[in-house]
Every structure is written in structure tokens, then in C-alpha cells.
Length: 238
Image (cartoon, rainbow, N blue to C red; front, side):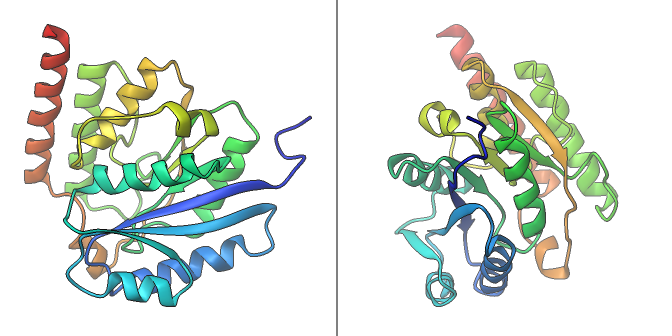
């Protein structure tokens, strides 16, 4: 029986922190894109301790919302969403950013690619074609991908991408220990340790004035590198 012979249950996870400005439009676009698809789709917003009304707007637009009392970081919010998907036996999960950077059509393309393959973790890469990205962001992301390769032996053009697709096996077995943005690289490392099949595909990143103010900056990248090096050394010595 092929992977597409019955309707798959899909959980689209959107970690969000103070995203009241954009979250409603993001949810609406996802719902439109997956309407009448061969996936049974649920949109989950993980409100990571927002101080605005992110949760209320997300609920108004039809998403299920899980709220953190305190801000745990991108890694913590993503872990909560994937744990929800795992415990409720979804076949597939996808994560995407809440600021409108990712296109719902790219999420759908990634889900369809994973379903028709043996891939466990599929990364949507902005750097296979970096059109539209600022030179600073390109350099920062390539630098972190280079560090990921040096520390963990993983080749990725965009190790920091928030658009990721997970198989059922990944939902059951993939775990990490960091809670900040460094989780993006650590996730790839843990997937490699689990002998999972990792791949990537090209996506388009949409950068508005709003989204440019969100996410990582190159100064924060230094903290990410320090955290990853510390984690790697700790486990080598342990």
C-alpha cells in the first residue's frame, strides 16, 4: 500500500511570540491552502508567553491554541507543538514561522514530498535560492550552517530554517535539549544520531518590514554558536 492511499492526519504547528499583527493572516492562508486536500489538517498555535493578544486572534481564526505561561524560546515552543502531534498520533507534522515569512504553498509542497518518500525530516531551505534575502541574513545563515557541519557533520544549506516537515517516526523519536534558536542545529544532530533520513527542498522566504524585525540577528548567532559548542563539548566529555 502506498503512503498516499489513505488520508493522512497532518498537524501544522506555528510557534508564536507576540505575533498578533501577523498570526491571523498566516492561519487563514494555511487553511485556504489545505482546504479540500487529501490531508486531515489541524492548525496548532503554540503561544510562547506572548504579552499581546496572539492567542485570542489565533483562536478567532480557527486554530487550536496551546499557551505557555512564560516565554520558553523557539525550541521550547516547537517541542510543545511536536509533543502534541506525537501524543495525538498525527501521521505528519509541519512547523512554520508565525510572522508571515513562509508561504503555505511551500508547506504543502514539503508535506507532499515527505509523504511520497522515505524522508523523516525535511527542511525548507531559503538558501538553495536566496533571492529576496538580505546579504546579512544570507551570511548569517550560511555561517550557522557551516558551524553545524563542523560540529555535527551535517550538510545543510539552511540549518536555521523554521519550515520543517516531520514523519511519524520523527515525531516518536526526535528530541533535543536546547530551548533557544540553537535547537534548529541540535535537531539535525539528534536526527542524525537516530539514523533518520534528512533532506531539504527549496522554499521562498517572504521578507516584509514586519518579518525583518523578527527572528534571529547575526549578534544572536554568536550566542547560538557558543551554546552549540558547549553542548557538543559536554557530550563528548560525558
